Length: 377
Image 1 (cartoon, rainbow, N blue to C red):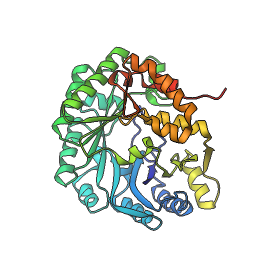
Image 2: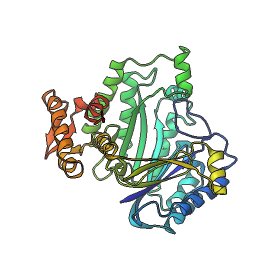
Image 3: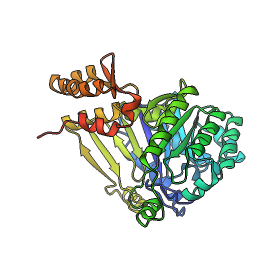
Image 4: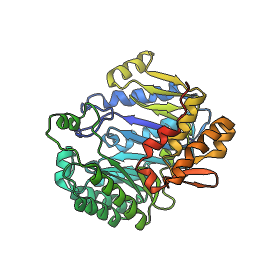
């Protein structure tokens, strides 16, 4: 199982919370497509498998491209790999891009999964975040996509936003459940450096939500999602039966993937690689045959810590049998020893020799993961 990720580094408008690499200048979109095609050719041997089970268009805002251009990239992938018949092909999109015309054309492409950036159904939150759509527009977009036959839809929701009361958060989720979608990705607002929100926070123009309020919003999300038929399969992700994000799960299950585009990351078991996070430098290097990426060779303990980090995020948990098989008895005993106190405190449970975070453990997941890491002295 291998996947391909395209990072589309363009947005029509800058969201105030976003720390992902992007540009609001759309002048080089066509040149960037040519560079994507060139990078695919240059890196056709990166994956040791010639079968592709997932393709994901993320960003940025991939829906700045026409469906025909997205399909062109999918067709380009098929020149170098066999795209499986049931491959999951996801397009991230802004609600206001998914017009009747766009959806009609997209339905004729190979895209079979939508990830729609809603964030909130309350206009005051959307204005604060500098989103391009209204709450009603977001709701209507999902209904429209469903009418065009899209039956694998994920929506994004953000909690911990200044001014987002528990009542408003409950209303947001009620509308998500009412829409009968298949997948939810929900994240706590982060004040990443160099974002507009981080600068406003520093100047006192925003007041960060109290930790207890954020905790209560996340707890309500977990409980209400479960009551509405969703499985909480990863810290920030919830799905109906049969609708796990196969692409993102490949990251958490440590499957290999190839990232195309500026700032995109790749992984092939022994090394991680990341492209230049600069549109012009990336395009120049790809076009002229220069270096457009950096890489890190992963040693024995790097690979163990990666396994801990990715596995403990999920409801599959950290498989101790796999630890023993791949990393030996010493790290197996290390994990068992670390798990003991968290099992006693009910932050972890043990099932079929896997250690899995409980609902309580999810709230302190970063601390638990850090404790399991092995650091060479």
